[in-house]
Image (tube, rainbow, N blue to C red; front, side, top):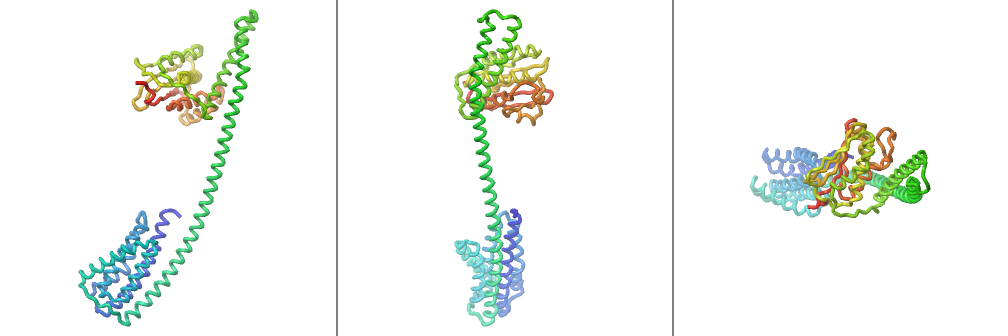
Length: 434
């Protein structure tokens, strides 16, 4: 049941109860007006109260955002009109008591006994207004005709009201069961979701621990391989032939590359497990840029790619981990050179922003990617270029993003397919040393 349907359902129940009650009220007060030779105006007012007011009250409640509150106001207006009609029929005891008792019963049925006090006060105001409008008259004694017309009103209203209430209770019980079943289904779904989330987190922790452990196990013998290859290249075991020297260089280069990948895996594992730490100090950003460029200069030169910088005359010092800052910049430069074709350009920009803080970006004129592929590129172990034809593990951007977030910043990537990519590391203003 949607919200609008629920509002209309409540307004219909209120309309039915009011219509039945006021029809009986017209009969009861009508018997008194008939005996008193009432004016046409009084008869029209009585008929309007009994047959027009319920329709107006329904429109008010059905169009209100909160029909319950709207009907509370309608019930207070019922009490006001009931008080006015008490004065019009000269406070005739039996019809006045019965009709206003029904009004109080309706108000009490809204589960608000305290509202009876408000209703009584409003009823007194209504009686005063009726006396001022039609003149004060006090004839409390009821004739037998008044009693004959009024007592069936009480019995009939209570019977019909009981039927309506029973129908409402039946629908309420049905709706309660439906809600209970819905709550049960949602609770079960939430429990299953929490269980699945817990299992996924446990699997992720297991994966992270496995990668970390395996990386440590691989790094030890790998360092030995690199060390021996460098010793052989230096001629420690004797002079090598040109062919053997080339083999040793290949071994050393491949070992260095593999060691770099293992170090990236270890760094990302530390971040994912929450064990990563940063060792802050005041960093000269220009110096970091100058020391990062040589790591990719040979690769760029061999590929015919121009390396450039666009640095302002003054760069404020940054409070950061210098090693991680250098690692982030080297990763971005390596990515840019890797995906930039010959005769392309890779540029390092540094700028200070009042809102964002310090921004270090690497822009290339490479292959670029579609905007919808950027979230995938920021996920670990995912590559979006060439179906994996370009070497790499997909750790570069995720690792930069994780390290930037350790500093309270982030990584923003903008890219256009066939045009190039700009990856910007942002550091918050509070990390800039004034």
